[in-house]
Amino acid sequence: MNTVPDIFRILPEVVLTLTGVLVMMVDAAMPKAASRRVLGWVSAFGVTAALWASLWQLSLPAGYAFYKTVQTDSFSVFFHVLVCGIVIATILLSLDSLPANQHHAGEYYALITFGAVGMCLLTSAVELLVVFIALEISSISTYILAGYRKHTGKGPEAAIKYFLLGSFATGFLLYGVAMIYGATGTTQINEIAALIPTAQSHSLVVLALALLLVGILFKVSAAPFHVWTPDVYEGSPSPVVALMSTAPKAAAFALLIRVLYGGFPTLKPMWTPLLWIIAVLSMTVGNLAALRQDNVKRMLAYSSIAHAGYLLAAFAGLGIAGIAPASFYIASYAAMNVGIFAVVTVVSGYEEHLPLIQDFRGLIYRSPILGGTLLFFLISLIGIPFTGGFFAKFYAFNTAMQGGAAWLVLIGLLNSGLAAAYYLKLALSVSQKPAANAQPQPAPRMGIAVTAALALSVIATLVLGIAPSRILGAAQAGAHSFMNAGVTASQPLSAPDSAPDPATVQWVR
Image (cartoon, rainbow, N blue to C red):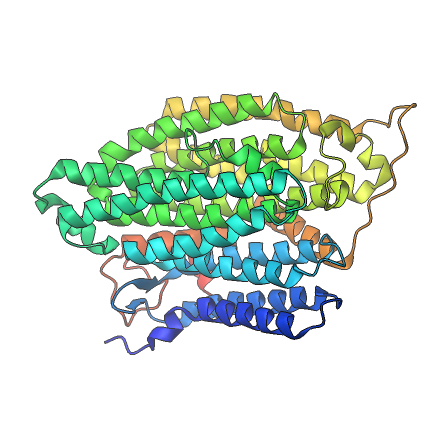
């Protein structure tokens, strides 16, 4: 019998919520003219505590909480740690990029922390109504953060577009929840799979799945649900883009895995070809559009659409075998993307006076550290060996090949070559000497916090490329939690019925 208190199952979310409330209370008590920088450190400390609380959950037996609406397993722990790591890097990046006289900084850090609550809850929710609540908690925070630079024209535009389209997509998801409840009589993800074969209306089940996919794929900016991405990325502050391009997508992909493999596994012959088509569309549309961009953030926005396609290729794997490669790809992409947006933040500044690719010309000469770091992340995004990007694509494409999706892999490889063109375009600009008649640009200044954020991203990308076994083991442990649906509450979270993978054992230890 599971005797673990329910509160332990959501301990990271509790820590994050208390941190956000503390930040708001301290912010309200501080003089208006006082610097809010200390609130950023309070947020970073609280999110770090939430990360350790997530790791502590590995010692708990697998089980549910709050009437089987939340599940604690190695899969949820993996994504909790990933989301918290991204949020910590984002806060560190923000500490040195927000203006010192910005008196709304307390609200900024509170919104990031509250958004993390929704993202973490989204990865562990196994009840579709809780999924909806978690999605809204995450989305509302990012809607506001997207328009944080309200004194600019592009900031409110980004927030309004994101809010309107996001609300519309959430409506699709909510209709899907209603449809699946009408077909099966439950909104419990783990029970839906058992009830689908006996559902009176199979067409209602299919319609529910389609509507759910629309809502989820919008959050990951997969084509054709990607139209919001370039404008929102361009109008939002760069630290916010570093967050919204990684953490919400990681949570949404975790939800996608739970819904498809946990709730609709019997419909795999139907949703697998659909995801193949979406993967091809995302890769092709994203890369072709990125080739035409002169704005760095818009180029990276279309690049993120293409990477969503690469990640979806892992779903072409043999059943549950696609979970570990997909999870590993999410972690690798998060490390690369946070790092490259950290460089963009430092170079372009909070007001982004240098937004174009040509503005990065000669960066390697103005700041060898920033220029070299940017080149490193571009190399990883291309997929050069000994970087996280290489192993991420290798695992995803290898899984798709084993699943019989040879044409999908070929299209993915061709798109990877296409992506190299615009990544190398930026890399060439960084490496070129400044034009003789160009106005000299001052060397970008790096603070301690942003240096720490960059260092974390570089180390993570290197570790994922040179010694990926531990992270892959964590991803495999998450996959085991799906394979062992009948695990008893007395077993440890990562204990599979069959012999575990050695890398999985390393992760558990």
